[in-house]
Length: 208
Image (cartoon, rainbow, N blue to C red):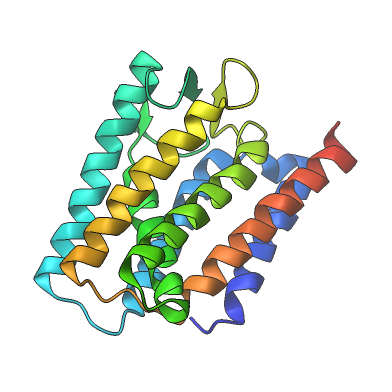
């Protein structure tokens, strides 16, 4: 996939969300879209080795476990529950959520690696980017039936936990020397953020 094709790919999703009939299929389309995004991004990696693959899989499994504990206890991110918008679940947690953490850690670390040479600052910047991503997605997540906090909007605890977990995940990639530079990382992240913002505007304009 060429970089310019990524916005076009997500633009189709906007059209489908704007149409009431096709909006009902978003619980199926959203996880498939995310999964396809992961496949395309990782396929464009400049170099893969067994260590990098195993580490990303480990991050996916670890973060899935953290999310599952968080859903059932409310002790990590706050009290929240997942809807049907992210596809099949196990232990009330979408199976794809761990892959999403691995994708974000990989993409943000790759972007930070292009701008900063100091490892510590690179890790911190990537973690902050992940928190910023979550900050924007939180506004649209309930609209797409992805997840919902009991209080309506996530507490500060959620973002603090995101930052700590993001630091750990990105730090693992940095410490292990995983090559994360990828020409599609910034395209996917920025396109997704514009997509989520547009979903929010469409909902306000046509659904409310």
